[in-house]
Length: 79
Image (cartoon, rainbow, N blue to C red; front, top):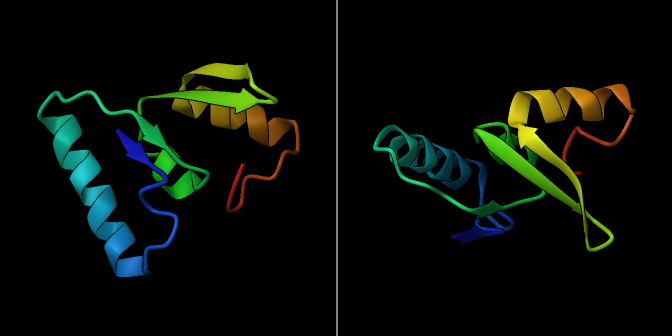
């Protein structure tokens, strides 16, 4: 479980974290990542978005992120 693991990282450390996530995925590991940064979320297979304590969206990351973009929600840095 990575809970806001990248919230206070410099760019190089964030890249190291993303590489570690990719490595763990390649080994078949299951990860639970809590993050507001799309840079990290976009590396994941599935995403669950909580909104006001309820599930706002769940599904394949690319599909969910494309729906967010079409709704004009903030997607540059956080969501």
